[in-house]
Image (cartoon, rainbow, N blue to C red; front, side, top):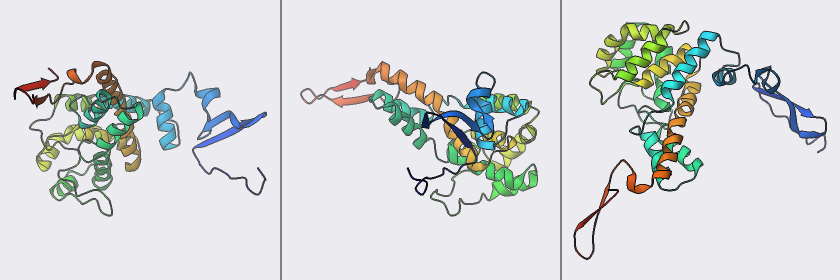
Amino acid sequence: MSAERAETIRTRIWREDAEADNPFAAKAAYCHGYDVYGEMLGRARWVDMLYLLFRGEAPTAAQADLLETLAVALANPGPRDASVHAAMCGGVGGSTAASCLMAALAVGAGQLAGGREVLLGMRAWAACGTNLDAWRRHLATPAADIASIWPTPEHPPGFDPHGVGTATPVRQTLAALAGNAAAARLRWLAANREALEAAADAPLALSGVAAAAFADLGFSPEAGEMLQLMLRLPGAAAHALEQKELGYKQFPFFAIELDDADTGAAVKEGA
């Protein structure tokens, strides 16, 4: 390729030094200045790399622990979650691995426990901070998602519109995260949860805890949305693989009843 036609990849995130005998292979790769293969491998945790990629700097020990605890809490939303259910449907139907994950991403992208809900929750933290009166005003008249393809939220982001009381895993996750030294918003959320739930007329959801955690970690709302999508994929993948192995007759949801054309009797599939 001539010098005139050479193109430069412009990114602050990644730099590569080419091998002497192959310009298309990297001899060394640097993420925000850190030598990934020469220095980070064997020393850094996966959450260290995640934080570095999205924030451009290495996390403190407390920040890494906070992100890792959150990642465990989000790793498997469970088969009743719509995004996991979508992946399970792909798996039981014989879809490819990529198709199952794309189904989970598509269904888990929205404003009910999805990535968009976390983004809106983080915007609320940016606007309200730890001011309880500001939160009460915000929850009384939540702002529309202006200039967006998304519809106006039907419930306060971060709260469970179908819940009666705060779910035990939500309480447990909030308690585990709030004890971290980097969790200022989460501690405030734990102390003021009941007041916020009264203002929202709904119990706190795990998406609300995640939004506070991502905000404490310094991520932008857009980064929080991405991470919410990514960190929930392991469970979707595992359940999709399980359903592919079990087959449609053991699918745990929505058994199908078909009428026998000859006898008129109901034949139940999945039994």
